[in-house]
Length: 235
Image (cartoon, rainbow, N blue to C red):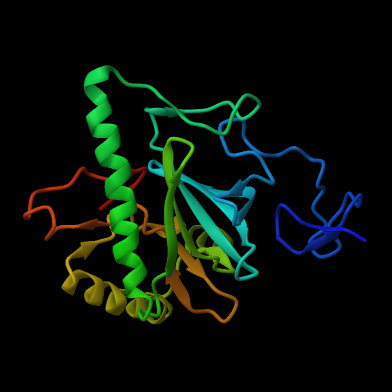
C-alpha cells in the first residue's frame, strides 16, 4: 500500500489514513499559515515540506523530509518581515514588496543568506551548534537545510520549569558559549541568540538553532551589520 509522510513528525502514514499512528496529527487539519509554503511541497525535487515549526524576523522554518538521505531535517526559508508576502492558495512564489530602488537590496539579501549558510555548513564539527546541510534558491527566495533537533526550546522549558538555578544555567549554556567562541574565531556572528533559538534535547543538553541570520564580519570588511532585534532580546 502506498505511503506518505505525516506533516508534523514526518513518520510514514498509509495513504488515506487521516491520523498519524505515531504522533496522532490530523493530516486534514489544514493548519499551515496562508503565507507559508503549502504542505507536501517538494524543494528542489528533494525536500518534502511539512508544517511550520518556527517563525522569526528573517524567515519561516519547516519540518521536512530529505528524500535522498531519508532523514528528517529543518528547512528555513528567507522571508524577512515587512518585505515578503505570499498567499499559498495562489502560489508558493514570494511576492516582494519594494520599489525598483529596493531590488538591489533584495538580491544582496538573498545572496548573503545563501553565502553565510554555505559557510556555516563547513562548521559541522562544532557540537552545540545546529549543522547546515544544504542551501539553494527557489520561489524568488532562498532556503537553508539544517539538522532537525528534537526537544523543546529553552523558552518553553522556562515557562514550564521556571527560572534556572545558577549551576543548571552554567551546565546548560557553557557548551554553547564554547561553540560560539570557535565560530567567532572564524569570523562568524550568530546575531539571533535568544531562548526560542536554544533547544533542550531529550538528554538534557542544549543546542543553538537558526543560523539563518549569521554574518561573516571579515567578509564585510569589519562594517557593522543590520541589527537583529526581538522582544526583550537583541544581539
